[in-house]
Image 1: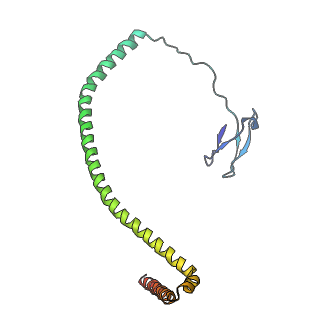
Image 2 (image 1 turned 135 degrees about the vertical axis):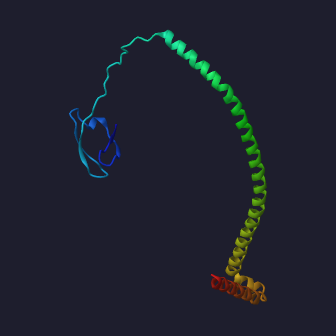
Length: 165
């Protein structure tokens, strides 16, 4: 069963067997408020109607309401068809706009995707060259000067970017 703290309105799920019929004190775990709680049983008596209802009155009222509803529905149907037509026009305009936007977004996002792939590949190549620098220099002796110049250039670019920031 769920019990609500009267002070902070926090709700707690408590086993019904923990609370005796005569009630007990409870303490809120959130605000430490203490209160007496007693299980209140709901009224289990069957509700009885004290007045008799005439079925003819109900049927006549129902028929009158149906007539009124039918009269109201005729203008509403015309309005609904007009609204539906306007919605269809707006949807077609939105679709045209979204198609043109998607085409421009695809071109822009494609460029940035290629740029990101290029940068990541370039960084991976530099890391690979730096890692395998000694074995590559042993195989290709003239490569030492090229790698040294490449690393110096990258250092200069890094310092340039730091100065810009």
